[in-house]
Length: 364
Image 1: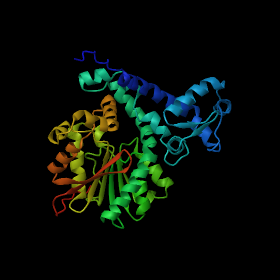
Image 2 (image 1 turned 90 degrees about the vertical axis):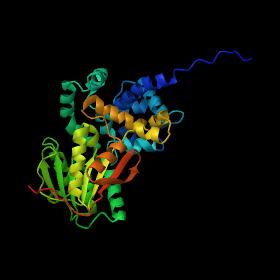
Image 3 (image 1 turned 45 degrees about the vertical axis):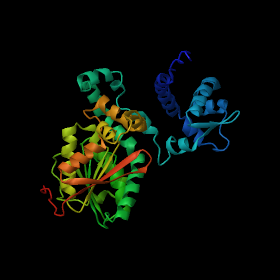
Image 4 (image 1 turned 180 degrees about the vertical axis):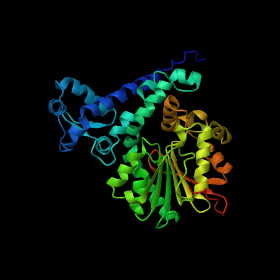
């Protein structure tokens, strides 16, 4: 009989979490130093050795730069040979500040206010973040909105093409963008339909960012800005062909999120479509009903869960699930008709009314 003791469980998952903190700050430091931009200025096939890279970023010497650069190699953000460092394709596309798809600013602002994280235990205990954290998010929000622009432009462009294939993208569409943020969605949609009209709704401190984006794109005359709470601010249109809810539902408490989706459904009426862009976390009831292992479900949704935790840390929201969207759509007389990822890790849901008669909102 084999009585050998079982091997003790290893600490790798704990180290992975600890090292996740270190990895984030390694990337942040590289961005602050302009390391990726410095490498982008060189021939990407040759790269720079530690001494030249230190000179390029204004570091005192090659030793510390070597430690940082080798860490970035381990993280898959740089390539290296015997004595030189080069950008990976991922870094070239997403971490060079001049790239159209750059996430360099998003790296800094996506985690929300730095003070939110040390206080997370208190937030979980009380159910709400400290008011100072909420105030910090309000101050940070315009910069965060700008940082989302490059990523959301790619998503919106892909969604417009999808709406075209589905026959849901008329030549002169009316779009209502509830929580227009950076203006990435309204500019991307109008580039494909320059004769369309977008009603852009957001907070007074954010709306000028979207207006500037439209102006820079030469599309300002096609945008009607509306400042106020997207739940109840009066709108200059009674109905829309497309209503956009891009990354807003997960930051709201469930009652407000449900009311916002219901408003979007009313605006879309029988013939329009609601486009929900978010990071839906898994629903435990769905996993139980489908006989799935909850651990496997959570592991597969790691990205979505971490972003939901980011909401919990600094907002009144807990994220959103597909089950939430189905239930809220159903209560509003609509249904979730499609879900897809037009670009990796960007989840889009299309919601349409189950009725054939439009019930428009009252025009202001």
